[in-house]
Length: 241
Image (tube, rainbow, N blue to C red; front, side):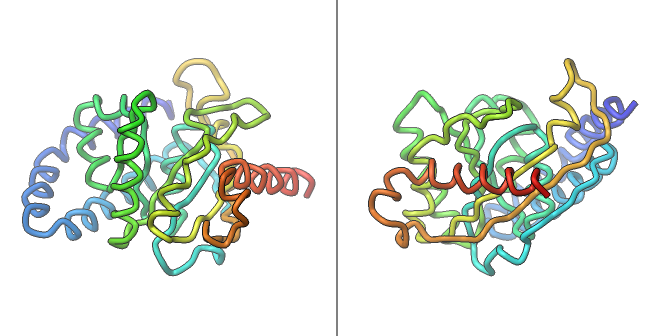
């Protein structure tokens, strides 16, 4: 029943909000920042409702670690629900770096653009360079971003290697990097075959921020591995409690 309710709400939202999206497009021609603010507010409440329907019990830790400036959140990736959890708990209403295939989903791709999402073709180096430039510009303009350097959802006990270069956006924008540890989001959906949403406990932990420029030179070259180690250590500490 949860799965039906979530899918029904998503379908109705995407269809019934088409006129609103066109209004946002018109607003964006006059004031792009206002378009983003309104789009983020609408999506925030839609995500909150979807999480409620899904039966997600969310525990948030380390919220005090999030600076009062735009940041790059760097997270492990276990579920589609990661996006909803990060957008609603981070206090920043961030945009996301998404795979290019997501841009092909009609209606959904409109809303992704309305909340500052960027689309990355993982097989095109030029796409990666452009994504870094666009992301850094969004951060400089006051929008926080999220990137998941594993590159895909992963429910295995061990994380996939974090792609090096994934933090270049923060280096170019000279913004803080906030490591984020997500645990249990896959229990809502991906832990079972098919589209079977069930209630579950989710923990999101925001780590201490750092600037790329403050890392030693060798560590900056392997910044992905550096953040992955932080997330891994956080997981181990949480599981040990």
